[in-house]
Length: 280
Image (cartoon, rainbow, N blue to C red; front, side, top):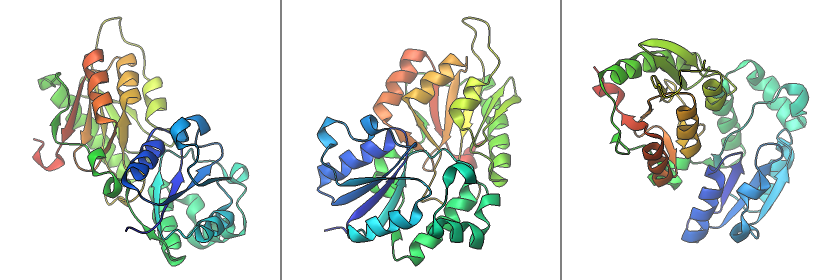
């Protein structure tokens, strides 16, 4: 029997899907749900109300560790989105304060913080596992997901957006970029993909162009914060007037593959998994 799993749950649909997968497989688990990040109704639907869990403030790291150890957790996974707060809003406890002081995490990007955090959690005796190890079906497959396909213009946009995404990724600034007509018109920052899409200039009604590309940061810690899309990403891309989405096959997460395919076909967008080594 696998060891007890601790889930550090943020926002979005990934944490409840993981919880449901664990329950279906008989995996013993304990959930740390972060106030202001996880949504109670999304995280614990009617059939998951009895899941062992505790609600904890994001900056209360010492309390989180105490609860996990008391629950007998030995493996940890980070699941869901975390809105990065400022230090004043975070209100770090003693453990968190020492962590920031020792690692200089306040000056790091998201991947730098997560890498330092994983090392600190391992020193506390936990084994950190990746969400894609627990749910391999979430790994983005190679090739088109639905019925729509990119054309030559889209391929040029994929190439331009990919170069931009890798550039900002190398600086630990983001994981995605948008190109339209071969020109980069959006780069992801700490506000995330939805904010990047919402910030695009409107296009003419019925007109569509441009591609969103999401890839892992070069050298990224693979056990946390992998690039991810879901049906809502597809809908947001359609609302922004884009023609499609490209994600890194094997290194991005697709949350609810069937839902993503359905949304893509309904919106008339292509969604495709790309291999960075095979691009021209």
